[in-house]
Amino acid sequence: MPSSTQAIYQGLKRAGINFVASVPCINLQELLALVSGDPDIIHLPVTREEEGVGLCAGAWMGGRRAALLMQNSGLGNSINALASLDMLYGIPLLMIISQRGSKGEPVIGQVPMGRITVPLLDAMNISHFSPQPAQAQETVEQAWSLASAGRRPVAVLLDLEFWRGI
Amino acid sequence: MKRIEAIAQAVEAAEACGALLVCNIGYPSRELFSVKDRPENFYMLGSMGLASSIGLGLALAQPERKVMVLDGDGSVLMNLGTLATIAHHAPENYLLVILDNCCYGSTGSQPTCTKLGTDLFALAKAAGAKNVREVLRVEELAPALQDPGVVIVKVEEGNADVPIISLLPEEIIERFIRCARLVLPSGKSRP
Image (tube, rainbow over all chains, first blue to last red; front, side):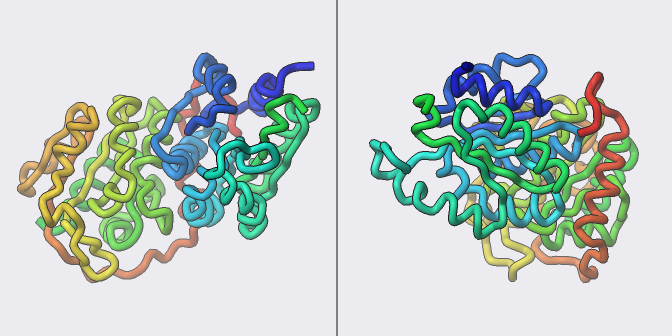
């Protein structure tokens, strides 16, 4: 079975993702290295996740398939842009989110956003998926299809257990 | 110079080279719509601060097309990190024009920090951006719009008496996408 990171990367590749904006999380480090080394993907490390929403929107308008890689803390930094840019105009976005603040979280500061990540997505009517590693490749591929067909943002949430391969 | 004068020159320059033009939310977009509506204009109706980022994504996705962004001092201050990203990743087909009127012009002209002396020219340079220039007089503007990089244009406070944009968001984006994707990245299919 491929590693958790490989499953996400292969899902991105099969979805045809060729533009990535990112703000790092420790759990995304291997994925970010793969994305950076991929000659078919334009990868922009950004200063703030909201900036990444703007970049991905522009890249999609220019014909690219765009994904935003970030921690769930970054979802909080992106709410207005997701609503008044992506959802207002009908711009698809695949969000690959390292979900911190759930079971096993060692950093107390991650807990508040961890508690409200799913309620925030639900309140915004953004579809979200929390696959296990064995299904993750397919889930990522399907999440992009849903985003692209529905012209809207879609989230894949990957918690601490996911990265431990559970 | 008045902001609408600067916008008129910018859209003229954009049209002359077929550039895609991303315009900041509020009165700047209304003034652009009023001066010269064209399908290659993307009018922002929300997401304040992200004009420069949207334009950068476009420029990277469409390296064959010129992309111009009309932004404002308040919006750039809201997304200052964009200057660092632009400094290190902006391609040669990208031009950011910051219309600095030292205030939040669409919400009652409350002063921004540029009114107090914050220097966007120096900030852009310090971020590492190349080809940064500042325009103070209207006759300096047209030549400054010919090259990629970052242009800070000092404009007067105040908005022109122009109507709201009579296009729906889906109309703005659909016609814009048709223009933006005329030249597809080589070997890539439409998403």
